[in-house]
Length: 130
Image (cartoon, rainbow, N blue to C red; front, top):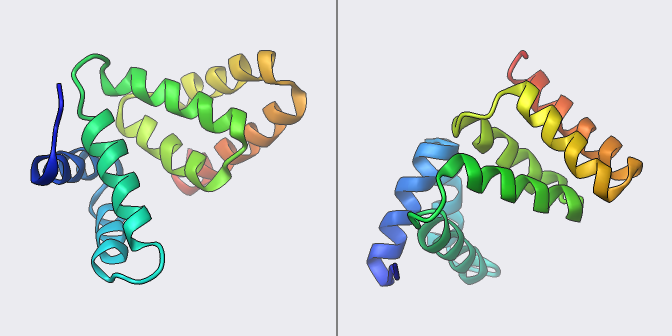
């Protein structure tokens, strides 16, 4: 499945709206449409990640969330991890499953990475009152 051009942006908008909500999607579009330094990089990342990858039919969104969260844990990218932990919950992952995912990743990535990821997860859950 290959999604090009306007179809890719439309697919990206649909996925981002459903996973991350309208405020997240509007903020990205504002940065893209505002032009300036970084706008092209933001557009490329948004269209490719959400429009070309997340929109593919080969894995459901829950599975894609697990893969994405694991990658972001390993890279220790807190801002993106927060976004995708929220997205993972929108895709059906529970707080308990997210905790288990952090523990699973930590078994292979080490305790410092587990502590980092658990701290980020606790922040996200606190935001949501969980």
